Length: 102
Image 1: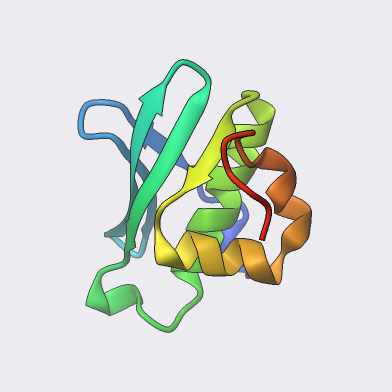
Image 2: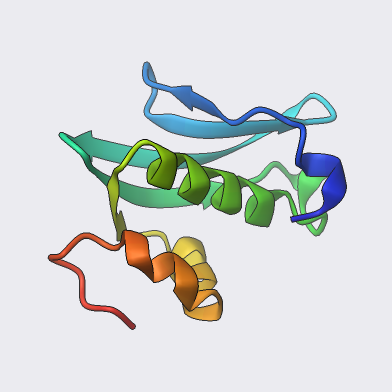
């Protein structure tokens, strides 16, 4: 994650089921579904103003760290999250037992 994004807070917006990261007044988000201590990450989106700046990667990293800190398991449905987990297999430790490692 770029150093400039490290101090920015991750917001778990439970009303609309988003993990959010706001940069320069624009908010990137990951849609999620939650049941107990299991979370499905469904879709990641960054506004055009933030594209190509590493914001989506920072959002994914912060979300995975939040999941770990709060003892959640993960079902990665979002292709971007899935690709991130393939590049960073150490995060596959968060996968729900129903998900095969890849």
